[in-house]
Length: 374
Image (cartoon, rainbow, N blue to C red):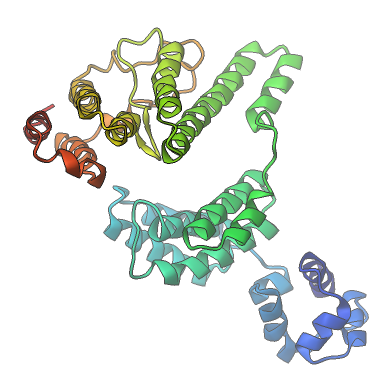
């Protein structure tokens, strides 16, 4: 697009009138009209102010947004992800490298997407940096808005909306979070895999149809497990403990139905809300039932220790609803023994279990976790 067409597009996206834009730039609305109708061009001294008003880089105005040497960008991404063990220091290094990449290739969508994901980790997730989180948060907003407005890939735009929901909620901007949430479709079957399966069926390519159906089932299954964990937590917070326990236990029932053919159930009861075993134990504690709480924690320790030593054959998916998707449902436990041990101890040492510190059965559980050998 020409500069005039770009200005018109940006103005309409931000719901500015020509008069309002002219007022912010200290020019006449006739000047704005001439730019948009390609009867004239902004003076070079006005380019930076125009970009600032719209919250974009000058690359956007000149039509070079996201252009770069793809090979060089790939090298930047390869270097940024060279070490990927989710340690805070490594996430900070990756973020710095991606930011440097954006200085060389301003607003490149690949770099923006990866930098947004890394910034999200530092602002909220596994690499949370309390000191710099509030400084990184505004940059995440800027990157997300660029992706939302300029990416031609709907999935990328929706992912940016999702991160904005998460971060705005975490930083207390509830109204902004709701604005982003309203951009999501309400139909759960509106996915690329459903559409691809539909096409494959009409092409009589039933192998592809089956694969896309399995992939769609996998994502819906993961989403349902997360929803159940969140619903159970909501019931617990409401004091509806019986409902909470029924919902939490349905997570395990659902896993058993889907993975009925497996030698060993995969560890997908570990959700963002926490290990469902610990969610159940916490519910029992709030009900005043210490013994049932410890029973559940014992099951968790038994499982975590047992799953690490399983053979690869035990961890090869046999369920016909998921076996062709090549997703490693057991990935959590393909790490070092020490890392597995630390994860288990972290769950047991959660503050919600402080009241159990002097309980003999709980002490035995901690000792067993400390002596974890896999």
